[in-house]
Amino acid sequence: MIRSRPDLEKSIRSLRRALQRGFSPATSFPGTTSTTLSAGHCAAVAAIVHRKLGGNLVSAKIANESHWFNRIPIRDQWFVIDLTGDQFGRPPIQVVAAGTLYPGTKLRDPAELNKETLQRSAALAVRAGLNSDGSITRRLNRRTQTART
Image (cartoon, rainbow, N blue to C red):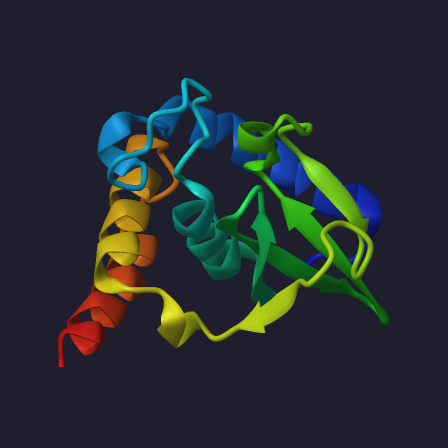
């Protein structure tokens, strides 16, 4: 559990460093053409962050594209974190009070993550070295199997 904003920032900086090593065309959304490493990875990254830190999945429209990120509680305050905003010319790591980053942000149910996104997320976790005990892949694979039915 994250207990302070500095703890949150330390955790997400570490996550972003690991994820950056794992970003590849094979783990990005099919058809992504941007040269920014994080492009096409937002939902896959949001799923990993959700599994590791909890909180909520959220999304907003950015440049007419659906963009997924996370909302994390610290005590009685919620923070929005975006680890792939650099695909839109923003900083690669953003941490702000909830409700202040992107207009029109909406809460998303984890069940809305489709099979393809869950598969990319599991592959990204492995490539980034975030799945040493297999827990992320097992949980994401269970969700993928559920998404099939």
